[in-house]
Image (cartoon, rainbow, N blue to C red; front, side, top):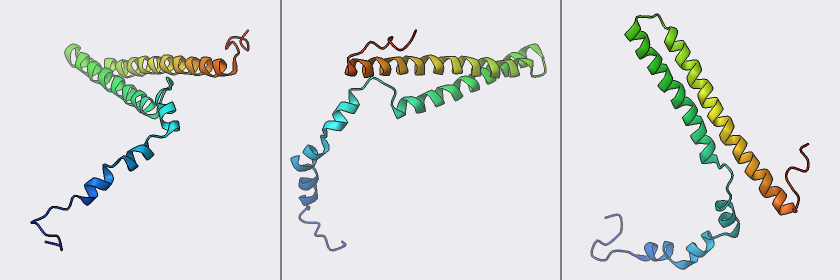
Length: 120
């Protein structure tokens, strides 16, 4: 079929792409250094966004549940959204502040200075 013989499988592509030639090219010094960094990566920022949205949605549904139980007209739904947004923002702020502090300490360690010298 399609000019390939089914009697003999063609393993030449498998040999080429699994050879040490491509694997050694993929091991780059810059990539190994970036993987050892302890700051926030793009995936961590995406996770923060998902966490932010999930917290708002969870508190929204919790507020709707309380509204249905107590018979109120959306009071707890609105409060739940604001509480969820506030909690998510606070969590995001703490995580980003900690990552920034680690980054500042790493940069000052590379320069050989104390990171608190500029903060008085």
